[in-house]
Image 1 (cartoon, one colour):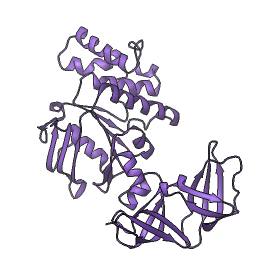
Image 2 (cartoon, one colour):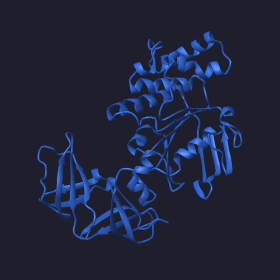
Image 3 (tube, helix red, strand yellow):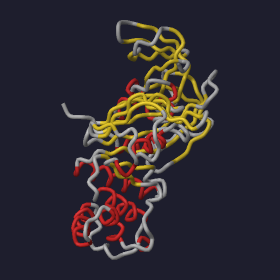
Length: 354
């Protein structure tokens, strides 16, 4: 059986009276990309730093490639980290930056440059070897940081909010490049972000963290389609959370009732009674006539490829957020509408967090 690339067993990190990571356990398989996702202060970056050896656990065990590294320093762990700021040396060329770790480990300049040239080729920077970081775009600087990390051929490559300094268009391109590189080279990557769309796009698996603990661990599809809690439902995909009454119809299926609207869906072994219906914006169906809940369009926004609506529902405090692809005949603000939900975009979660 293949050893996990990274192992956490009941790991806790305290700073005085503050617990930044609280009894966290997980395994990360080799050649996979696992994202630590969550809001600011949830413990994701501290978890990454614990893997890197930049922080040391207050309790628990950390393993890399089957070896216990809990007490080892960062220099003694077979990991490399790509920082949010890239941390390139501004006075060094691309080649010199890429070679830095190899030269520090004792390789000759010729040996280091031969290995670094190969990694620069992999990240698409052949021909840029003599440029300074200031002569590169943000995306190219990111790729230099990646080349400098992978040239050491670490067991685990760590990314700390790697796209936060890039504009939206470049973020999409660079995240695709990171994912392609990880898959082509069969790298084990642990990736930290607070951006749920970014996490969904690049990950084999996502570990969602909240208040220093794991809120849910699963594939992007599992987290999006079957959130374990109202926090996960709301954090991933901006779900509408509506109060419903849940009824069990058989061992797996149930009915969630909101006013005159009844939605058949898996009850996921939640108790019958009050619950929340997590409705993805794209699963909201709006029409001027027909069946469904009576509502009113509070506002409408044209976003080029789709419309976004805020809909008022009687007895519901928050507006319902809906996305529709019909831009030819948009609804207008103030218009009365009927609201239905596509069963493929809804899930039931507990009314209260445990």
